[in-house]
Length: 576
Image 1 (cartoon, rainbow, N blue to C red):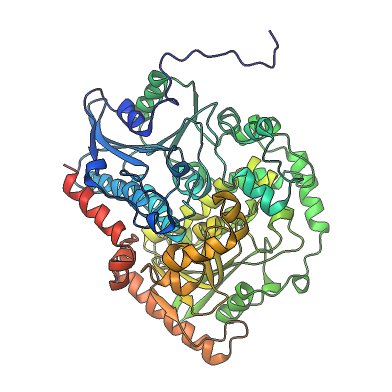
Image 2 (tube, one colour; image 1 turned 135 degrees about the vertical axis):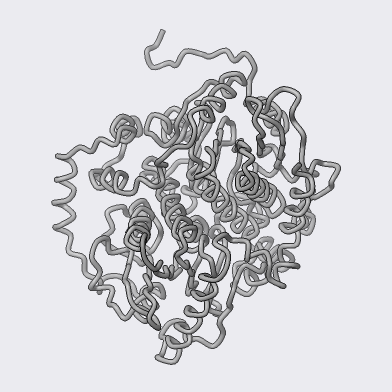
């Protein structure tokens, strides 16, 4: 037998071949499955028929109540056969709403066990920002749950787990189980090819893709916990083992210094062979000789802030903090400064272009491998420093064109880098720090999920260059097999599919849409007005809930996200 050939495993009962509903049934104790918001409730997506797409009665998510090892449990399964497991408003609300019910159970002393069965391409592009908001809320719910119970996710195949769900579901879950057939990847290979070129990623090279992001590689490199065969019994055993082991004290996304040191030792100019990082990244063992070589090279690179284009992210960071980007210590692409605003401490964080960034795909202001982990570092510094005192406000200045699209990014776990930033912002919010996002430019996709979407309050400038969406129109057209004109037409019918900030405001998540500000060259009166809006938001956040429930309580949300609210109401009615 060829030594490079894996022995063929004959599954007793294939998990992959099951439908989403059958998978949810399979992980619960036999005979205990009870579906919530089932097909006969007829809660379907209101947005798909407007675009000529037939809706499905469960909208691609099955929520099953039952027991695991005799304990109360919920199994949430995505049906990959419908819209590629994409997250829209209804199915996203079913996931986040169910997790929120699990949290309520634990707060009442009922130890309900949550299991996510992930087969998803990420945000359903036809619903755009509805999915983006839902995924942020899924991440927020997982973060709130982790101190109470393990949150277990399974990626079995054949679709895998992509996009924002790789960040906020797989990345934040306390335990991740994968089969060899499963894939875990932030940016789909076709999107990378579209955005970065076929030299960066050939989407037709399946063998290479599996070697990068398949289950064997992800577990081997420590990005997932357990590798199992495509077998119902084996997957169930792995789930049961997690709950018997109990809560994991330190999750991957909280290990900021470990991953920053591993990244620092990587030669970003060479092609990384995925299998070469397995042992060191899983164990956290840093090659000290390589680290010293890379640090010496980094010191030779003269960072000159005048080389970088002046973006709104930099302009507003300097205007609000009173600090120059050229005074920045540490990584040049993540600006951080502490100031005082009406007697309150405020930490501003902004991501800006760095022409000298080590990883070339993150030189235009994207959130890449180093950016996500460094955002997390700055936030965690504040959490630790303020542990016994007043919690300073954290203001994310949002002008991010996207996450970085690249081969190295996927091999080295950009989903986890973004997840570390999500984890840090959510941890700060849950610890009592007012977290405010001020959108001054682009707020796109995983970059916005990582930098802004976990805020207590969202503010935005009312300006035509302020945009919120999942990916570029060119990539969205390629993935959905529609023309740009068809995408533009869909945006006139479905606010969540539009790119402009006024359409995003119709969804009810914005706390303030600020008119009359000179966005590119703010004058002193503009800066003063924004300071006042920030102070109001900080005060509100200190007095309000530490979760994201306020996004569904505004008058605008009552109509803008009516389905999200209705799904939660039904889940509460059917839960017990």
